[in-house]
Image (cartoon, rainbow, N blue to C red; front, side, top):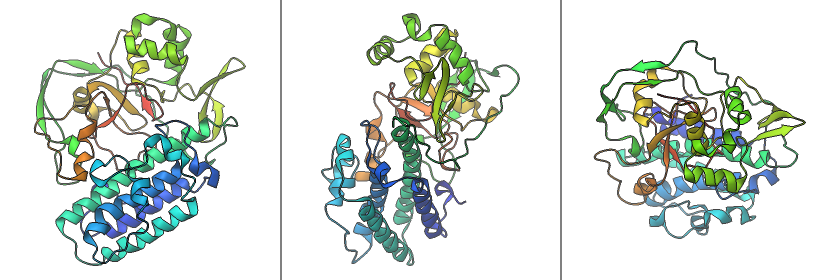
Length: 391
C-alpha cells in the first residue's frame, strides 16, 4: 500500500481513499456503544476520531480552497476541533465522551460528504501548497489510526468483561537477537530528516551532535525480564525512581504495567483478543517513562538519548513498541513553526514531555522512520511504550 509519507502529486487521490478506508476498517469490529466511551481524558471516543479527521480535511482543504463548497454543519468546527486556537473555540478534551449527538451514523454521513467533496476537488489541478496540506492531512489521519487502536484497547481493556476487539488481529512477533550490546564510538553524528519526501516539522532541521562512546541493546526488554523487576520489589524500592515517579507509584498504587492482571497467582494481560496469559518472551509495553527509568536504574543501566537511538537504529530492529528515551522534547536548531493553524501542529507541545522513538505494532505501515519523533508526558502509558537499554 502506498503510504502517506511516500505520496507523490500523481497519486494523492488514490492514497486519500486508501487511508480513509483504513480508518473505517479499524473501527469495523466495534459496536455502536464502543464509539462513545471516554474512560479518561487522554482517550478520545472512536466517533470523535472519525469526525476530527474528517473535520481536518474540511477545514484546511475544502473551506479555503474548494470554491462553492458548502460546510456540512457549522457546529462541527466546535465539536471536532482538537487544539487549534487559530480556528476557534472547541469542546474541551474531557467532554468528548459527552457527545452522544451527533450520532455515529451522522458522523459517518459527514465523513462520506467530505470524502465525495475531496474526490471532486482532486479531479482538478492543485497547487504545491494544497498538495503539501493534503499530504500532511493524510499523515495526520495515520497518526489518528494509531490513536484509534490504542484508545479502543483502553476502552475495551477497562470493560470489566475484557471483551475482545477482534479475534483476527495479529500481533507481530519479534525475534530476540543473540549477542551483547551494540557499541558506537564517540564522534559527531548527523540527526534529523534528510530527503525529498514528507516529514513532520519537528524532524527538522538536520544538524550535527557530538556523542560520547556508548552501547545500546539490540533487543527490547521483555515481559519476562520486567516480571523479574516486579518480583524483586522494583515497585517498592524508592531508590531507583525519580521523586515525581515515586509519588506517582504511591498515589496511584501502581504495581505492574497497564493491562497486567494477577489472577489466581498467574499473570495475565489484556490483548486485542481479550484477557490472555502473559507472554514472557514478548517486549514489555504500556509502561510510563517513570517505570522505564526505574527499570533501567535498577539494572545499573539507563535509557538512550534520542540522538543515540537515531545514530544506532540501523543496527537493530524496531517497530514493536515506541521506545522511551532520556531526551526532553525540544526543538532542533533552526526549528520554525509554520504560519497559521498548521503551525500549532507540534511546536506548542515542546515542553514537559519525553521523546519516544521508533514505532509500534499499531503504527500504520510506512508511517514512521528513523527520524520520527513521538512525544508523551512521563506518566502516560496507554500507548504501546517499551524499553531499550543503553550504557
